[in-house]
Length: 452
Ligand code: UD1
Ligand code: MG
Figure 1 (tube, rainbow, N blue to C red):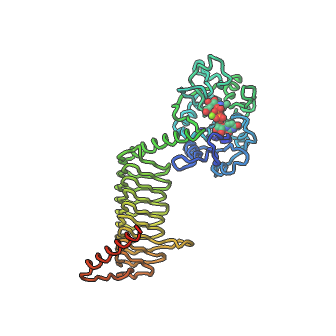
Figure 2 (spheres, rainbow, N blue to C red; figure 1 turned 45 degrees about the horizontal axis):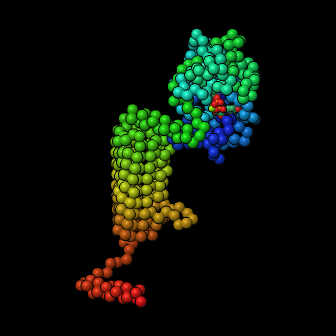
Figure 3 (tube, protein in one colour; figure 1 turned 90 degrees about the horizontal axis):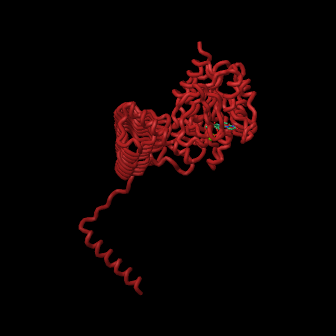
């Protein structure tokens, strides 16, 4: 059996360029904290251990690593110093140790796998993922001779020949677990930044007669996030990947670039999405359902053959059963719409259950909040709620009941009953002309008194 993998995630950097009260690695991308993307990516390698390295007092970052343990790097003295902080948590581990950055969420499992495999095959003590950089200036340069990685030189410490190298260090490193203690222990801070560079592990391994290698990847996977602009770039890349995966999975999109997905959005084959649809976390949509333009959906399960939107908002805790319709300017919150139920226009339906086949008319409001508590509205199957009705919760409308248009319903309506909750209409025959004459006189008098 191959020795198992351990992973160290460095996340003790300051991230001050984000100008944020929120630690950098917790900024969301496709709905998840950046760190979670990294943890999911390394998680697919089935590591036996994952250790986070965090700054002192970074309780929220440590919580972001849960259930994985974290160690605290007391002072940010460099990447080598940070990796060394994890050594205690790696005690006894003999397999490869992968070091990745918490602020580089775009690297893929396949690329990490290639590095680990290359290290296993070659027996290298150190392996590094490299890439040809369009602008190499911010990166460490990989000095490769005859296929062997001899050393990594940081920009500030590089001479002119080294500075001309465009093959750069991504920061992802794979170290032999049996040698990692010796390699990291030998790192000194004799460089321009007076930092302990993890990258020095390469030259240290070579001096000890061990092999080091570089495995090439794509620059796009190694983009780190240091600013809001880079956060937006990373979001764009992740969205492109999520859209591509959805399309490959059989989803039709009228204009993919305008569809915003969350990292966990589940769209079945033969779902159709109009332009400008946004998914928050926790949405699944079953086959044959159409989501028309400009919908915003979060925390909802949507069944088969449903029609949603355009301009629908579905909020967390909602469930739309098969063949139900949620039309334009309809908002659902913590609402279950039964099979084939319809709310086609202009409605707020919150904290409710709507039975199968029921019809909710235009302008219906479920009055769920009285300023203190939230209350439920329960509607049985095959009920009809006429347009412009307010159902003042808590309230129940029985199976097959009919609420007439414009009603304010404050009492339960039993199954099969008709409820009128409005003033009775008064019709006065032949009185329209007299009314108009009266109104005309009143308007003229008002105009005269304004002139005086
Ligand atoms: C590092 C590499 C460089 C590489 C580049 C890729 C070193 C010496 N240099 O440079 O070769 O091209 O990344 O982006 O490794 N961190 C800590 N504690 C510390 C310092 C850093 O946890 O004391 C973490 C940071 O949070 C960050 C990562 O390590 O996630 C990299 O640190 P950073 O300061 O960005 O390193 P670079 O100078 O960019
Ligand atoms: Mg950096």
